[in-house]
Image 1 (cartoon, rainbow, N blue to C red):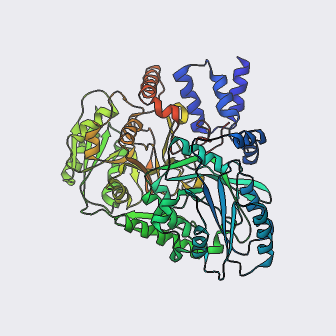
Image 2 (image 1 turned 60 degrees about the horizontal axis):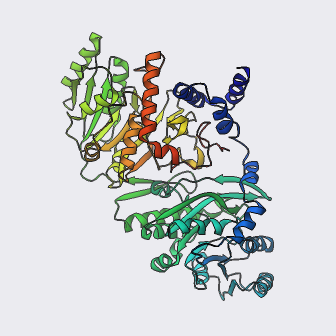
Image 3 (image 1 turned 90 degrees about the vertical axis):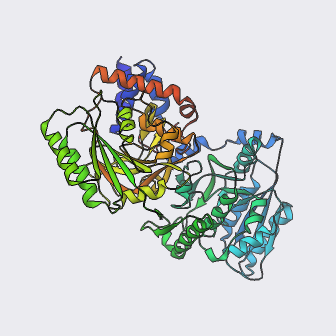
Length: 604
């Protein structure tokens, strides 16, 4: 027993409050048996310094040798495109050597040199060309800018796929191998990988990305490197556009994904982005013009897609806020379950009627076995004062799913906003922000940024598998903290959001038959979101729709044996129903992260 206690104590030093709860939920669901192995395997190795993690996870020499011996059924040629401009010789050599070191051999390196006759670069590249026929090198008469120079390099390409590499960056030696390995399963149109940065020879700042997320891409160019695309798509979109120099890759990615029918994310560090004084990576302010070009790239993408929206630049360099229009301003039906706790409900209702810039709504309060006279007196006052508010009665025992399904039967709107009674509107534009996303055809549900009373984050998206079934990410950070890859402060896609504040379409709610009433308290919102994901609908986290959530004040925690047993059964039911999601991992949460410690911490 003492050894188990020691392990738990050791782990607790690295856990936040939510992680501790998740360990408790594991014990409640599975018992103490097996907890030691669970913790050792999933906690003790998490949160390590990235440089140590990288050394353990990079391809070993024996693995690279095995890859070099590997013969794939299909071995497409990959053309690596590099525009060169006054590259320091050391960086140039590192870049070329990283391609020469590839464990997959069917490649060509296509370099267009716009350095204006820099003889040092010319001489070194001619030496490389003399010893390697797969290198194609072209000296340009004039430097016409990054886009035109890249297009000149593209003219040299003869491969089935195009890979983009900056002149001062490096590929991991297994980069092309991992790409081609994915192509054996499916001839993907577009592939991209994780990446890190290199400063003074040390690896740092890894970008462990989610699978393809259109809302994250519209918030910033998270794809960047390593980006590989079919040559036929490049020919179709016409290469790079000089109008977007500085963010020409952002514009190019948008045009490629618009034509792509399949997009593959490879969750491995295959690209090393060098940090130095002149690079955007090391000095974001060195290319301020690039951020304006990025804004224009998003605007052009939205216009090509026929989407009515405008783009705002954020104070964070390279981050953007896409604001979608709400044509027709449709009726939003707000459904709020309530039992007593009138102070909470008053605060919630008052915040909406006094602050909301969006006014075409109705509010359905679902009364559930209140006992205090003041509660019913307040209901009467509300309905007399506000014609848009209606109180309906649910006389059965508390069942979150059943209560909300019942409340919906009294609504008239095309869109539902489910709210807990212990929420409070912060940003006047929150409802319209959520509605703008929800009106998009591809979107199934929209969640908000929820804050505790102390202005720390309560909800900023939900990850499947976190804490054994599902859990919030970026919780407990300060309101204005960015979170990993800025995902707490920008719009992006997740597999689920909390229904403490969630908007969805009536049509989809009816199609999936609402909330599953077997989930009385837990998992009902996550289950609903996964039903929408089964329809290939997006679940959007909107960071600009801010509410307070005074969590669980109205019902309390699972603090009795009866509640704990119910919780265990609901988790068990969820695990059976959504086994494939739990087994395969959340597509919007990189598999290299632990699902037990604080969010976005490296696992084993």
